[in-house]
Length: 419
Image (cartoon, rainbow, N blue to C red):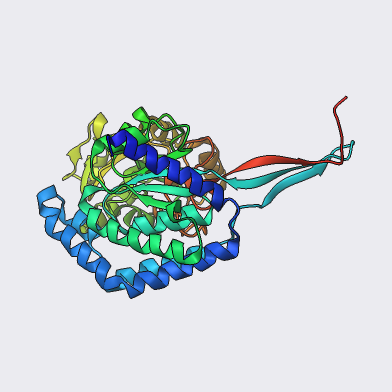
């Protein structure tokens, strides 16, 4: 290529051509491809694992943490799980061609709205190579061509996985360029692809805040995204405290490095003296560092003094901000001020309080007496997801197959003309 812009344009042009062909592919063909890709992945697992070992050997040089290396690592059982994930996508309902609604006008014109693919998706992600397969499966099943750009730390793994995907596409008779992988780690290519709004329909970044901020700043096409997962658990004065303790522990401690983990605890002052000592024992036992307000520190004396920045921080670690509030109104106001509109939970037996929380908390998912960790495509019954969006236009919350579609109006007539 004469330049990275030429390379980016070639990827986009090939994806656009593939997306047109995919619009005519049947559900049976897409299902066949997913099963063939799953079988090929298992059959070629030694090839994939060998390339993954190359990435693992390079990982210390990239400064990856132990947790990041763990996410990067593939195992035989992990390969089987990824293959099972492809088969699970194959079992989902194909949204393409679904009639959303229809009507017959007085002049006999039949008007309907029908689900169609978005077209070409540019998907940028970090670390986890299993995401390569998930994204490819979701995009193609929803009729979209996808350009994948993984992180440099997983390049060899992603190249091996893409070879499996490409070969299985050809075998199934689907367009070879339905799934393409950016085969260079040059940052300039991302910038060039983000300029191609006439060729790429939507960009989806999945990774750290700095990546998402760059994509949002430079993209000329729509972006489906979330910046932070600053998720709250609010323990109301009418809470079942044992339930609240279980929900807090699961929300904060089950997996700390994910966007739907709780980062902030709010406790109603009417039950602070009974609930916070229980929370103190649990959090200390789990090794959680707490940063709290002065009232929180009465019952958790070892907690650090919380700053304004602490309440606005996505820790992705065993750290938690905490504050005692005097009312449901104050809890909702703090969530609006410090939260990221991702996932927030109330624990209460007061139905009126629960409904007010649901109505007034403006987040992509609101939980009542449940862990924040449930904001997930699989847990919500969508199957796999390509990410979680905090936007309000087009897609919000976990983005599964339906979120990767739009619709078109179709009018069928018998010669009608407008008077």
